[in-house]
Image (cartoon, rainbow, N blue to C red):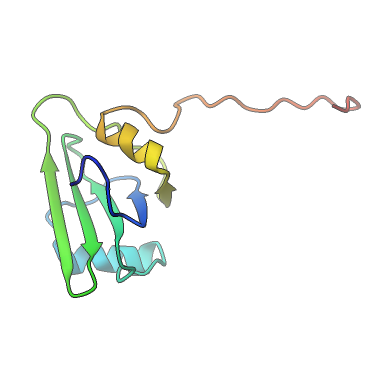
Length: 120
């Protein structure tokens, strides 16, 4: 279920480090107070990663209760953005890339260059 990403309305990646010892209530508080999002948004998956990038936790409200997901991969690691202390919504393609171990954010993104007095 977690790898395919079927049935999720939205997927949010909570970038940076999260203490994965936190349970449902602790993660829901992070979603509510740090990111100002609603943890009770049905079929919305929130993903968290700790300092060890071989495991992630997910929190999902199913309408009648929370589902706490925990995944540890045996070989490799998740390419998790560390420097951003915000939450970002993932597209289905970005979600598939993340679950496949690929980077979803470029380390050195291409920046637009503007020259004064030159109009495109």
